[in-house]
Image (cartoon, rainbow over all chains, first blue to last red):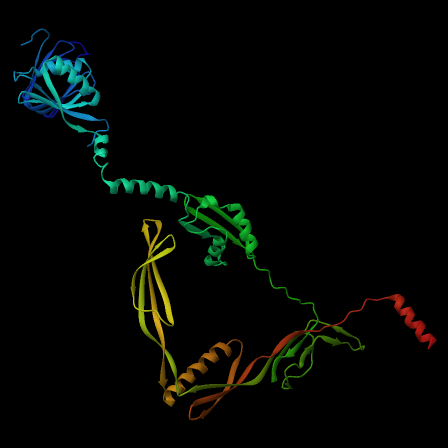
Length: 77
Length: 410
């Protein structure tokens, strides 16, 4: 992965910003699965997860985040 | 916090109760440029906020995906303000505040006067009022240069006046005319005469000719130092007589007071409280009657915020009613009153430049009261300048020749 990959900002375990979000693959209040522009898959587990889209080509996740998993390009689970 | 742009709270649910793919819906929303905030997926439904334009797009998208979209709530400044549109008081207050702000934009609220210490502030305020400048007036209707010119013409003590205004504050700068110095006619021929009957005790002659000697008696109007000086050759010339003449003279004063009389006492106190708005007073509390004579005093407390003083103040007006009551005094009380009066007379009239060398008091008691006659022997200045009205004739050689001819014919 180069230097221009998606930037992910995590503030505590209550706020997360993911840049370059291409697609929301699955979403409910405890689970979020997204695909980034580079093809990376991110899985976020938590409680009361809420999404916001501020027109920045990324999304913001609020709620109680308990775990984050990343899978490489083409390793979709 | 209220968002500036309108936001609509939506709820998307499946039409037939089957499971909904929330991820697919949200990806589609992003693909169509529908911005969302605070989206939550719970209980098989999706809740969140979108913009008004986004809501229309979302409704269309939901129909395409076999979902139902409905608006739950609306947020934004328009809705926050619109909620108060039926409150008549708020609307009237808003309109009134706009009207008052527009009406007060050119109104004078403060007049500041500076520059002159000799001319009282009240006089300048009165002159300003005469030219149409007062608290509450519309400054835009007043020609300030014309007002300056008028005030200079109305009051001779004002050398220059400058009036300017910043917003509702009028600043007045006044420069008063310096008083003309007293012109002493020191070259005018004059005598020094006696101002009263007296015996001369001391003389200092700086210019002129002394007529009586020290120890002589003079009556009022006698010349003490003459401005007409004779030479040993029989000629005389006029001078401005200068000198200090001290004399001893007696002065008699009678002070009397009756046993029965009236005295002014404070009968009662009436208080009025008012609110002063732009100088206009609105009385909101009044206690007691103010019929008759009274002593008046007032206390004004302006409304201030730091150094800013508003044209709003609370005024408390106090009226101390004065009543005349009959009194009967004992001889000792009358003597005490007379003593005070004599002391006041001596303090006011026999203290500056004179010395009281002797003081004799004669008392006469009658049925109605007591009279005290005080004879003072006083040593003080008795000289006063008095001009000599000399007639000067211009030298006319022709006239002199005619006089010679007349003598020869005789």
